[in-house]
Length: 202
Length: 250
Image (cartoon, rainbow over all chains, first blue to last red; front, side, top):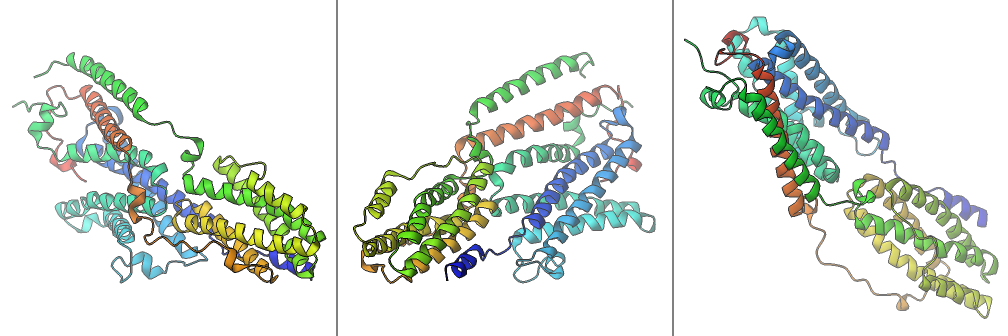
């Protein structure tokens, strides 16, 4: 009888919490966030030419494309990782359709953000079949996409209890792209005053 | 228009401001213990300490019950509790080492008193009664701590650990009650709090945190602006207001 009890108690009824799958999802999310911030920085610098004297436009553009590809790769890995959980896995519909009933708002932010970025990346390939201005407007949707994804990351960190450890790094990575994006859309006169453009010589 | 030679001087001044801000952040940032850096709050630490503390007296109590219990049921339950607590103790020490939480090495004075009471039980029948009641009451106390931490912890490892501990302690209470010696009227009555933990507890920021965040934004934003301006100053002497429209995108 003692042996039976010994056997019973040594089998702890622990439900798997998928630490490996969740760890990969978290790591890919953090890498994607970091690359996303760098992509935006490189994008603004490519568009404005503010650091062109150091690198050249082609190098900046290639860097922007590489960083964007890494952002999307890790972002997709993060989303698809949730299909492989053994406890309450997400369905393919849940991670692809943003406004399904029951979808959490923070998940919707992430889904919309990632899908906008994917749309931007895919339309880069079909640029020749549309007008440049139309493509440019689509490309500029990257700004709200980054904002939505940053919100997704922020609320995700709160929900998972990681905010205390991640907020410092999260803010540090986010501030440069936000600063550059704000500068990008400042009126030329203001940029001239702060020394980012010089007066036009007639 | 500014002369080009002003820019390095301005940049140096900017760097000085940044250094002053950095020093301010370093002074304002409160020193956090190692456990705080690993995302473990006071409740998480208390759980590890309580479970470790419980194991320190329940393991020897289980061993004694296996050999000194009068009832076969008490002997079985004692063995089961000893084995289960052994496993839980290994898990507790591993997790505490990983999360840098200091654990007690000896039973508390109160627990030593219970062990003495068991050791000095006049008859094996008395031993059974003391064993079942003391352990059941102690398990009840640690059970509520585990439940609270399991419900509100922000740490996924602590959550998984609390799930295991919760199942183990519930099983022990059931086993102890199955001996038939537990006096339920002597157990402390349930004291259920009417309000749950606030959902926004994760956003309970201290003034220092807000200040640090604001300084960080100023610092990194300022450094970005200064950096871009500095790189830009090496080029475009009397250049254009904007890049060519054909090159603009994004």
